[in-house]
Image (cartoon, rainbow, N blue to C red; front, side, top):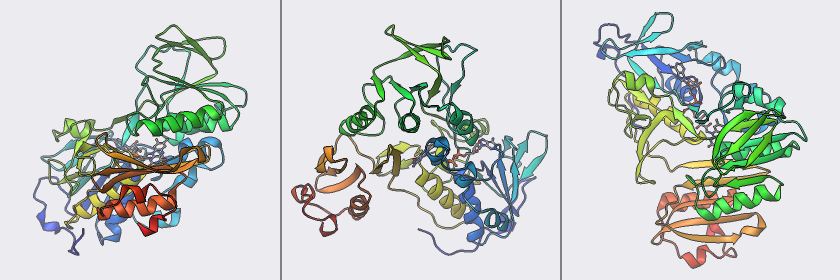
Length: 421
Ligand SMILES: Cc1cc2nc3c(=O)[nH]c(=O)nc-3n(C[C@H](O)[C@H](O)[C@H](O)COP(=O)(O)OP(=O)(O)OC[C@H]3O[C@@H](n4cnc5c(N)ncnc54)[C@H](O)[C@@H]3O)c2cc1C
């Protein structure tokens, strides 16, 4: 909740190199872009320095495993803002520039070229990077990762009909790459070390739905399969599994999670635990430094624990919240998580955090391709998910937010419209 207050007074800046009129944002991705936009919207007339080590203006990543990878959308279409709107923000945007170090005592950010930028407030939106495959890989083989526009553009031409793709990792990015490649006529094998797909983020019945979906499209899915090494082979590569099986591949992609870019924060002595720790005002352990997006770890009341939310929703909303907080507005950012994935025309959405302690109530028939699972704590829905059920999920989200007690039998009856619940 924000209260209308004027921006932080410039005179509050006392550190030696601090620039009272400057807010620095490190990371020009989705969170960084929205933070910059919000600072202007909230009336910050001072300098905004946006440092981004990528050459692109702030953009969204979801299309990189979908339309951009499929070649049906241009990379430029992922930009957060139209060029004129971006220019109108009047930012000191530094593309291709990496922040090297934060000097908290002097309140300045040091760049690779040795220069320094003083700040009044600093917002860390450094996101994360794709986790590299932690097994021996022959130097002649390229194992593709997918995080950036550059990664998508390098992988897209490899998705050729009739060729063999091995995707290592049956999480969201891996499954979306598999779906895109399969739709382009590749022979696809997904190798997942755990016993089910997306094990970390969805309950078992949803993993099974995803498995059935991919198998029905002709994708081979190997569960409980551990990759031991990748060697050069007759195609481009041979993927060796721990159980002795081998997979021939023209292209290999690893989608095995994200490493938070929290090194700058750790080196600066900020509290970190698998990412930069922030409170519900997006402040780190240094009140002059805030963090948002994939790099930020905060307590989420819906999950009942601290976590990083790696999602489009969180990057945008926490980026905005951090900007407001930097200006001294009252902020309490405790989002009800929302995540979606698109695979083979199926749109799966997850609202809230399904927990093992929840009672799952099914609404609809899984075989129909569109159904809802609501997760109840007593009579209250705390999470809901489902494929191709966007309309019902909007109502479910409202019920979650209102914490309204519900009769599970009525919830399970698709003859009763969600709007009547
Ligand atoms: C392929 C893909 C598909 C996805 N699909 C979905 C989806 O369908 N639904 C969904 O909800 N979410 C999806 N996500 C997740 C979502 O895109 C991310 O959660 C979001 O992009 C995070 O935004 P961010 O700004 O925190 O990080 P990023 O977008 O990673 O931005 C961080 C930026 O900071 C830069 N940086 C880091 N360190 C420095 C430094 N020292 N100096 C300067 N710059 C630095 C990085 O290079 C990067 O440009 C997807 C992600 C990927 C990769």
